[in-house]
Image (cartoon, rainbow, N blue to C red):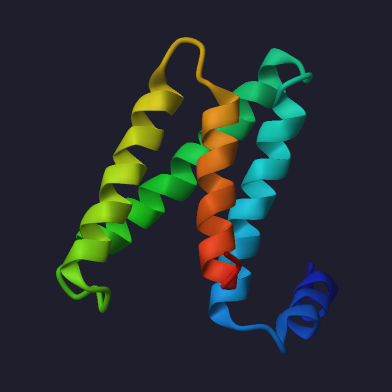
Length: 112
């Protein structure tokens, strides 16, 4: 475990916080893409991980101490709530969830 943490630290040392945050969304997307053809257990796991990711994002944007401008916080909250509603559906639209995560990852990475 310690060697894994050291390897992760070395690999991410030269990367910005925003790039690392973008990677979190990309990893969630990898699981969602795999869930398209995976068994039910893997689908549930990918959706649960995506739900936890967006719960964390919502917690940060609802925090009064957040340094983000209020309009941006509101926009992110709106997207996050839409994602949470989609995840809770009986048959979530994985393409929608993947598209949202891709857009967030691109924005964090400074891609247009």
